[in-house]
Image (cartoon, rainbow, N blue to C red):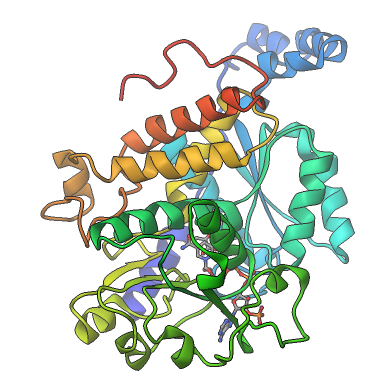
Length: 415
Ligand SMILES: NC(=O)C1=CN([C@@H]2O[C@H](COP(=O)(O)OP(=O)(O)OC[C@H]3O[C@@H](n4cnc5c(N)ncnc54)[C@H](OP(=O)(O)O)[C@@H]3O)[C@@H](O)[C@H]2O)C=CC1
Ligand SMILES: CC(=O)C(=O)O
Ligand SMILES: [Mg+2]
């Protein structure tokens, strides 16, 4: 473990501190190059954009650039450690945007006094980018922040911990339940956590067919029920009219456990109380609500997923955010709406049912990857994810009327 800790620190430090850099896309060797790139040549696109703002997509990097913006109030499952400490995660998201979807991305960590300060800061710089990916902002402020920015910005604004997580969770859960021949509409679901990820995951599952009354949500004070008088407006939507007050009571007979809370919050004794063939998504990062080794040792009929890369079934928003932005930016979508989110769920889901290439199996360090209990969802390194998800999302944007340009000819058609 210490060895891994040092490896992680060394990875970040050497040979150059950090994980991203900026590279040039145009020649800049000669005086002629500089005359085009800077003065006097740069004045021409300036004039063009001043006359026609859409030309910014023609003459600058905006259309392929996403800002990853955080205030560091909910860094993974590590808590509120502030904007500066969130920088490695935000650089990591930028790395993933580039590696998986070819999108340029820059991290921005915002220090602020009030929620309104944060909203103003982001709104005032939003035009620089093709899209805004909000990251690791705690609930309930994240809901107000995202809504305000959607209203104020001309580019898509997407809180990844809410919607990226929800899309991947829905895709993985629908597949896991299909494997176990269970139906989302009758599944009893326990959701540990009532923050950004939890609220969005449950809302999207309801859109996919789950019944609100079958959901038991817990926060740090226990089960969220109708007699509680300490609930914010988002938790209130999940106040269950129940006498059950403890995890043990709600998990007894449950089909599904979704953990988006913190480490080691689901014990082996709790797991033992679940219904036959339970599905457990222990998605807290870096340490899940229950370790897969413990879950599998406790019962052999469990389908277990985590947010981590080093176990089978990685339910992590990395399977979504690079590709949903790729599709949204490629048709200059003004928003990322429910139609686009549901298209992403379906595209991710269906890909898991297709044969996987030898290269992906090898890169995943697996012997085989076939749709089943240990392969409910594609691997992030599967190159088809980009084409499938981006295409589905872009088409949904066009069909739902938020695209500002047409689908490019033969867009992502070949994979
Ligand atoms: N795998 C993935 O793709 C993703 C995983 N996550 C993980 O989900 C977790 C939450 O992230 P996020 O929603 O952004 O953060 P938030 O801060 O918005 O929410 C955290 C929630 O966890 C609850 N919680 C904390 N401790 C406990 C406890 N002991 N028992 C029950 N609930 C508890 C909090 O309760 P209260 O409301 O009472 O404070 C709060 O509702 C993190 O671990 C994060 O890594 C998040 C996004 C993506
Ligand atoms: C994966 C992620 O975004 C998180 O754990 O916060
Ligand atoms: Mg996050």
